[in-house]
Image 1 (tube, rainbow, N blue to C red):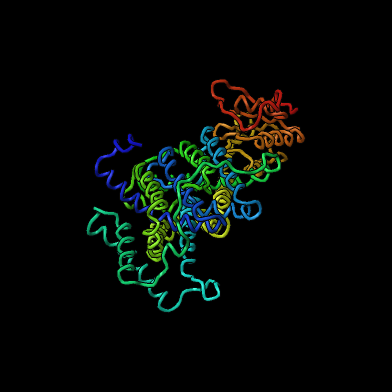
Image 2: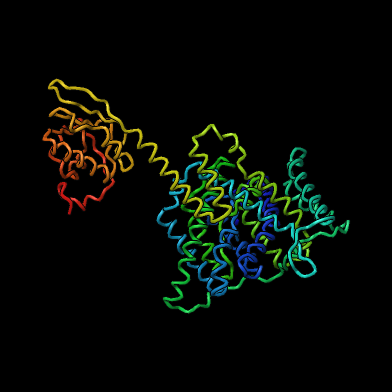
Length: 517
């Protein structure tokens, strides 16, 4: 930790320290709220925020990114806690960490590059909407019978006033000075104003007490049986996937904001180690947090020190500072999160409508909607699948042929475009075995045979010409294609100088000189 501090200039140390304090103040209500969503004690969420924030700051692959207890994980574990108890939650978090470590060790974090930009835009916009909708719960208060009702009258106007004041300070203070993070000034100003004027508004302490001690080592108390493992594993796997997807996409977002590059595989390992430790110290697990990460970056936090400071401040709040922190008005923190929403949402998405392909627009909207109403992991996976299908469909239409006649009177089809599963039907429609002359040449020089479906399509084409008793010649086909072709293999004209050399996406062990086993 001291080496991390020594690497920073005094200015960076100041920025990281102040931004870390700002993040810690914003972490408290989020951690408490997510713990209540998961039906566990608030300290379970706070311990997760402390441990996740500290270890990912030290071990993770993205300096300046903040991790902690998140709503994405809280939603997943509700059923586990309700049906089996909190000890099963700790076991799931422990196993979740091991899974994430394995992803990093196997270097699977690089597959985040497969997420297309429309999916990334949908993720960011959906998450901004999720953060916004989560703040709506703060506009409710219990009535005399304990039923939550929307605020009206003076309490509502007071809350809106504090929110607008907070947002105004965050927006306009940087134009006057950047010596102190505007978010920190807004939190302090709103809290002092509320205290000295005696304003009657809800505070952090009204949500739950955050006072506690140090987290203690505690192995999950569940039966060491296969039945218990079967209960824990599905939740652990889903939590691991949700956590990694949100963390790696947040890493990409911070990369864009800072114009630097993080390390996805190292981040997987950092997240995994943090969750493993969290599971044995009574935390609910977590992942990277978009809102807090943006607060950190906007407040000047760039180094690992900012995350370390945020975690240590959070621990100090739990141990000794709870009376002060519990006085922070909820309205002030809602104002902070509203500014996060404004900063997170990609407003350029509206300008892109009509300028980018309709499919990309619909994919982005779909991912955002699914993120809001279902689950982050489902949204991103759905977006990737839709993008892949659109890509396949667009490339399927690219295959075509230039038709000519050679000196011998034979017909030559010079193919252009990739031949793969989606373009097979278009490939077959190019040819006319009944109307073609007795000698036909298919030239693959400007095409590429990419998968098993393509191999089968070529064999089927050979069978069609054989039925018409016509000679088919295949030119510029790779050696591997020749090995995999069954009917059309003997029809290939070999030219060792001009023939291409590439692999086909099939398992050659399933074939012997073109004969399927």
